[in-house]
Amino acid sequence: MNPDELANLIASRRSNIFIDPESVVSDIQIEQMLNAAQWAPNHKRTWPLRVAVVRGESRHGLGEVIAGAMAFRGDDEKKVTKTRTKYLRAPVIFVVASAVGETANETEENKYAVAAGIQNLLLTAEAMGLAALWSSPAKGANDVITSFCSMDNTDHVLGIVYVGTAKKEAPPAPRPPVRITYLN
Ligand SMILES: Cc1cc2nc3c(=O)[nH]c(=O)nc-3n(C[C@H](O)[C@H](O)[C@H](O)COP(=O)(O)O)c2cc1C
Image (tube, rainbow, N blue to C red; front, side, top):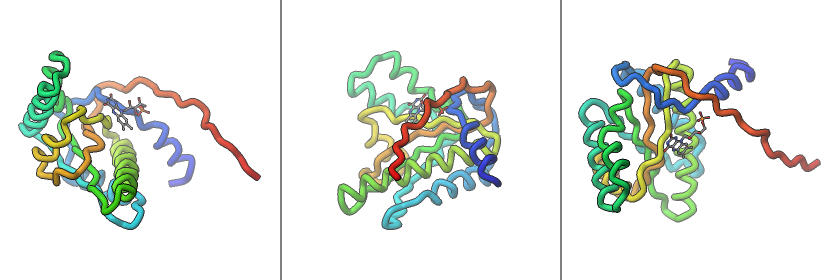
């Protein structure tokens, strides 16, 4: 791949929630996306990436536990109700978390590594012709999500990523020019 091809791939990736929930994402594709995430740079090689692959009925379970945490916090009832079924919108949901480090700084840098890994994952999905969307976990739901996903309760969930085949294109998301300072 030459730099222009890579630039095109990067710029083509869109956050797209218009996913066919009946579409198929193979185990091989899942492994390729997750291996790409593991290839992100990682200070001190702490390998903080933690992922749960949520499919089938478990998508319902994920929505239920998050909705429960939202209701407990007193979140808007409509949002709580929507959350119960929102993960049924894609055939595959990746819950992506970052492990705690030995220091506060390491914990922070672990998150950078996992965030970079999510971008690798999204670009791999794009290269496979799949649609994906990185969504934020609901506030106050970290404990129920890590427990549901059999992760450590010190893991920090950075994203809940929907993946599947697009049923509609995502709207464009143009970028402003980069703010650059050249120091010669
Ligand atoms: C940390 C993070 C959290 C995000 N959370 C959400 C979310 O909860 N819901 C959503 O629709 N999009 C979410 N997004 C996607 C952004 O809205 C999206 O990247 C932005 O609109 C630019 O569009 P593009 O990804 O198509 O370039 C998130 C992105 C990041 C990096």
